Image 1 (tube, each protein chain N blue to C red):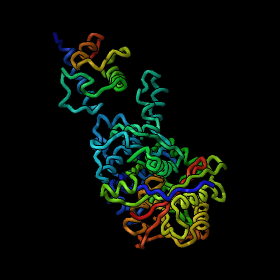
Image 2: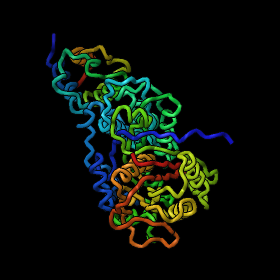
Image 3: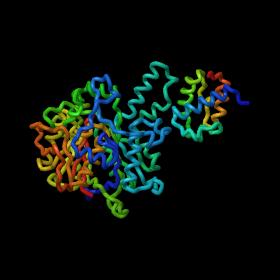
Image 4: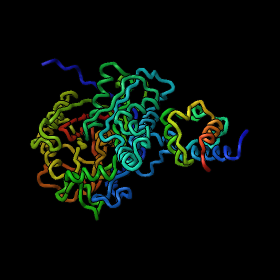
Amino acid sequence: MTTTQQTAVERCISGVLVTEFKVDPDTVTADATFSSLKFDSLVLIELTLVLEKELEIAIPDGGLTDDMTIGQAAAFLTDLGAAL
Amino acid sequence: MATRPAAFGAAITGIGLLTPAGIGLDANWKQLSSGVTCAATDEALRGAPVDFSCRVPGFDADGLLGGFEARQLARFVQLAVVAARQALADAGLDPARWDGGRAGVVLGNSLGGLSAVEAQTEVLRTSGARRVSPLTIPMAMVNMAAGYVAIDVGATGPSLVTATACASGATAIGLGRELLRSGACDVVLAGGTESALTPLALAGLGRMGALSGRGGEPGAASRPFDAARDGFVAAEGAAVLVLERAEDAAARGGRVHAVIRGYGAATDAHHATAPDPQGRGIERALRTALADAGLGASAVDHVNAHGTSTPMGDVIEAQVLRRVLGARPAVTSTKGVTGHALAASGAMEAAFTALALAHRSVPPTANLTELDPRVELDVVAGAPRSAPLDVGVSTSLGFGGHNAALVLTAG
């Protein structure tokens, strides 16, 4: 079940992808995987660093993977205690 | 002495240019012909001892490359990729239709992604190692210029980056021609790129005494061969040439801007940054290039000199040019307009030499109002000079004592 908090985290991720990583907003959906958005392992680390700041959490290295969807990432980060 | 094969011609069938003089061939030629310098106060250098430079105007990396890709590339790579695309379009070559295994990339670069290094050094200092971007090294590495251009255009033949400081672009073109001559490639993207206009780079160059100190009048700062010159103006830019064997270009029916007919390289083995006082390295490079081209010195109509606007370098080079070529060639230094784009400069100036031959016009040396009396050359100043031009030479010298000369003939 999607919680309000998870929805907010998903919005945060989507916002970062568009504003910080210049991803085409039309391609940013809950079902989009990072690999479909051309994120490789290096860019995923960059994303991790940005989201750690935005969400005020520590994300373990390798926590975000390229086969993860934005929705799955939001759930994962919510479980880690993402604060919004 | 080994017998020399007949002069080998590498046709320049495409040119991509992103320089302080503009983006594209027309913009560059118009600005060069105007003889108006591009040097201006640089907001990114505000507060630095030298706060002016020559930047590529209006370069929209996000628009040209897509924001997602552009943010992963250092600016010197962005410039190279766009220049390579321009050059291929100019040549009428479609990378989707070529045999990528027969295509090579040779680009010159010197300082790599210095701005990324500076920024991430600050991150390391203030926030610790874990916050350092994993793109730091890919953005810093000089070879990424050739590596990423190869990715972008699908060139899977040989690729490399030459690092002979301010001769890098000319070295790249010379080696690119060798890849055609050896048969290793059928098409080579050859050129140079540089973008390192950072406070650290400018501080370092300034402390070397290499830069002009005319902070109050940047428009007058780059003045090659002028008696009042006091150093160069740092610049950025990229130039990429599409090279093909002359016979292949003719068979394809493509336009030929000019032909790279000779290349020579030599090293001073004298000092890390000071040129040989007699210019022996650049003299040997020039004589080698003429021999490679199978041409005598009297055949040379035009020289695009390295001429950076430094007090010592310009005189040494001028004396070599006079000694080898005499006083007849029409000489210019386009660095008066563009400033000194370091590793890109040799490639930019090879392109400018090709354009001069094609237009049969020598662009003037900006800000040259009083020729240094030790420069006993016919240096074009004030306005472009129209003349029948068949043979042109471009010279390049770099820190480390690297020297390169290219001989071009009209297409």
